[in-house]
Length: 272
Ligand SMILES: [Zn+2]
Image 1: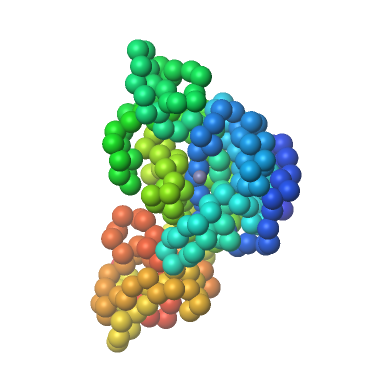
Image 2: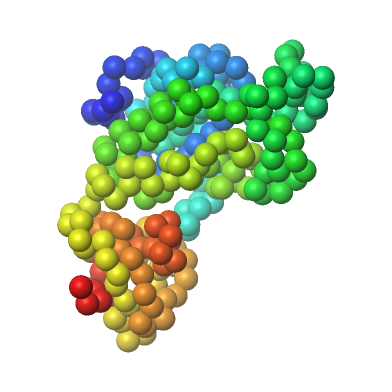
């Protein structure tokens, strides 16, 4: 699976009319469709004036509708690591999944307006990480998750500018619940991350400290135009996950989760 000229090879491309300006992707946003098949969702989302770059069906079949370097309308009002409105810097993947099910009936779970009852084996019962009571969430079949994983790796290989994989419920908490508790986001968060990107040698992904005499700005992107997320004290320890020009994507907690960018001139590598 490979992205060439912003198009994923060997899958159907069904061009959406809802497409915006050129973007540099910095995030990958996971969604569920809240509906049935990916094909139906392509139509339903188009009819609402919205779009996403990719749709992944229950069996793992993929449809692309917007080139990866163009804006699609999937995130809506959203905020993450200093960025506002993630449509202008994110690739969106819609995953065919019914989402929440709030009614337990004999033999399974359903919700108002849904004509079928899902057997318990196809439902994950959990409270959403953003709050709310425990309910049912349609499970994601392994074939579908494998396809999302392969797609994630192909996209990150083609776009080293992508620093993180997030859920719609991360960037629009309270407003959005997808991809929800049934989606194993952690499995995708670092997939294809540092591997396909940057110019650091493998053994350079070591531990660094802030060598600036004063506090160093941690920013939401690789440049002084990006918002300051927080200030790092001189001597703070961090890991460099990736180079982007003079800037370094860093991890402050040692959990391999990217926390933001700092200028590389103010970092010193600790002894080997
Ligand atoms: Zn969504």
